[in-house]
Length: 470
Image 1: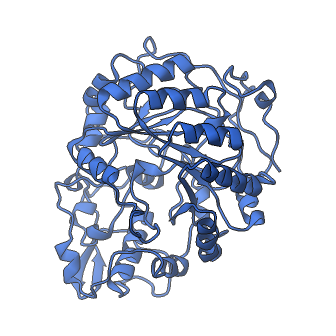
Image 2: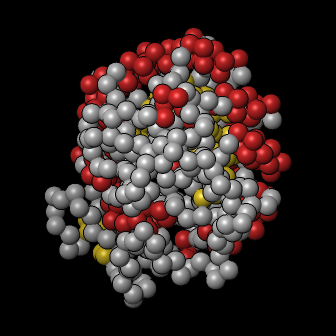
Image 3: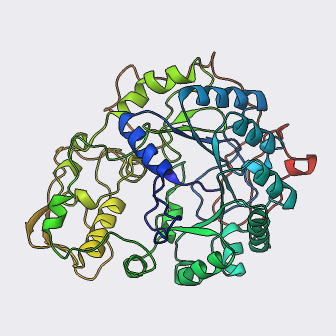
């Protein structure tokens, strides 16, 4: 199950209606908490396996292992003591664990507002009724198209579309709020208007995200399915969505410029992210350890881990190229994406630069002219960009004078302090191992070596043999 990065507002969401605005009190609390570095939300990925093999998924399953029930209960207690109020439970596919409902119940007993991320394949009427009884805040299900053949092509599980629809109906019948979500890609973008109509006909909310992420092992294959410029602009200009109102003046860009002492990313700030094996990370995207949930006190790890403190302290002024860019107000960069693309988490990278140019065009209604760029191409030059006139920019050197390192599974991070933490193997729990996800179609996610033993946390004995999905 693909979860969404940074627990932030998605780029494209339905226009707000009375009492249904996505900008809720919970979001405002989270924003203030993130600014102060105080965690009020957490994402726990309790499963390192999935019963789908989605072509765009950024996760690599079956290589981390999973904590047992008692370990997750301890983590939930410590999250409550830390002050976390909003809890998202995800995977992998969280419902594959036989203790899934037990952990949801335990979280509700601790008074968390619980949100579930799932692909819906295991959600039947009985599970839906129990989630309704537990008053979970929301269940988010991935639905990739209003057309069964497209959805099933994305998941590579025949019949998954019908099962998602039945899951959504069962949850709504149990009075559970349901949000159906999808990244937009070349396979489904043309149907987004029908998607909105179909989802609302089920009594569900919807969210569409035009961004695809590389896999956590650095594989960029999912990004090949990304929208082109024409599709992106058409979507953002649709009146059913709510982009930033256009002012038509470049002066508006200056007024909304991001201060250099502000943070470019919410990583390690208001949200605690915990992997299936208990490892803390800055977010769901960035494969860099910031401690372990079972190594001493979770509170101490959150506030005192050297890597987390370094990431939490990063501002726009620490980014050699981006800090001098005049399109910074339109930039929505990602440290993990930068590191996987150009080998440097702090450097400009093509996807962020392209996105900034496209957003400028949407918000101001004018295509920015880049001096020296080839007209009529979707490929964006690499910033930083300096303004040379009305809607005109020139590319400038990145400011560091040093070439970026090549992308690597272990990129250099000279900005981290020398005392940056490494996990102490004496304190790191030995989680049970899980079966690897295997499928015939698409890129292999299986590393070399023998298949691992099945976990004792499988739903049933048959689930330890993951079937091949054509």
